[in-house]
Amino acid sequence: MAASSASKSPGQPGYVNPRGIPQAPFIEVVEDYVRNRDQVQSVLQSFQEMLSKYKYMEMSTLRRAAGLEEKIPDIQKTLDTVLFLDSRRNAESTLTTTYELNDTLFAKANIHPSDTVYLWLGANVMLEYPVAEATDLLTSKLNAAKESLKTCQEDLEFLRENITTVEVNTARVYNWDVQKRREEKELVR
Image (cartoon, one colour):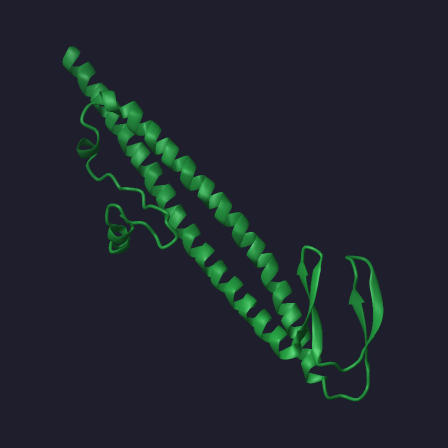
């Protein structure tokens, strides 16, 4: 099934985006989708379930994008610092600087020229890297985070389109049901 959906383009029935999110079907003619009024409630319920799944995926993707938007400046700042230290590697004097320990706490440090840097990896882990290796690592992490953010933004756009499609489908089926009820009332009179 994955092979057949991969060959389909957006807008075709059964399309699944590259991250596995299925495209909502658009109902042009309600009669092709709902044969009689007895099916209306089950169809509306399936649309509500589909809508809640899309909204859940949207919220999850928004959280992931927010985390990346917070992480990217930190990675860039760390990379800039490593590049600055690399440019001062051959200097003979020490560098005196003030650095942030906490949001409101700063300390002074004397930095001697060095061929290595220590990177905080998180989870109480700090590793020593050669400057060139640290630069490569941070550059690859930065590029991966930017690419992941781009993917999140594409997924959000795709999800919003599908949420709109499901909402329109729901309205079309509901309006079709109201129209059929009116026609039945007119026939009874």
